[in-house]
Every structure is written in C-alpha cells, then in structure tokens.
Length: 77
Image (cartoon, rainbow, N blue to C red; front, side, top):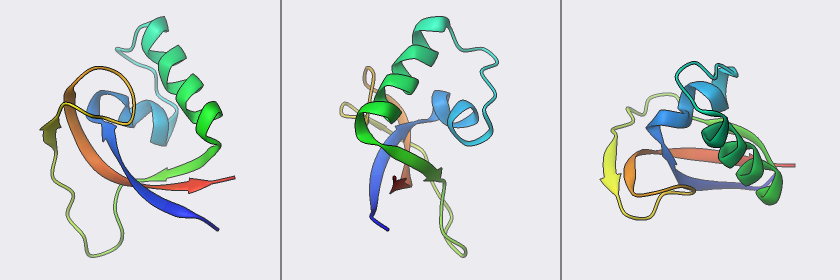
C-alpha cells in the first residue's frame, strides 16, 4: 500500500476525514472530490500515533489557493 505525505488545507479536513461538508461551498466540495478522484486517494490520515500535527501556512497546498494546512498521510487505491 502506497503512502505519501501531503499538505491538506485545514478547511477541508472535516469533509475529507468525516464526510462533514458543514460550512463548505459546493465549489469547495467539488474541488476536494476532484482532487481525491484524480489522485486515487483512498484515505487521509491526520497523523500517526504519537505525533502531534501542527497547522501552518503554505502557498502550495495539495489543492486550492494558498492557505493553512496540515501534513497528512495519504493512502492510495
């Protein structure tokens, strides 16, 4: 199983990890869904046991405009 680390926008984490689209626009949801489909992402893991994730700003998130992100593990199909 392939696994990489990507900078995932914090605004999308509830939708990606729990399926909760609260406070997201239809465009936001479409952006996340298109990114997942295009990259064959099966799962996004916020952090491994014993790690403490810290959000930070980047100009180069996995998708979307520059924003606050968290490093997450991606597991591919």
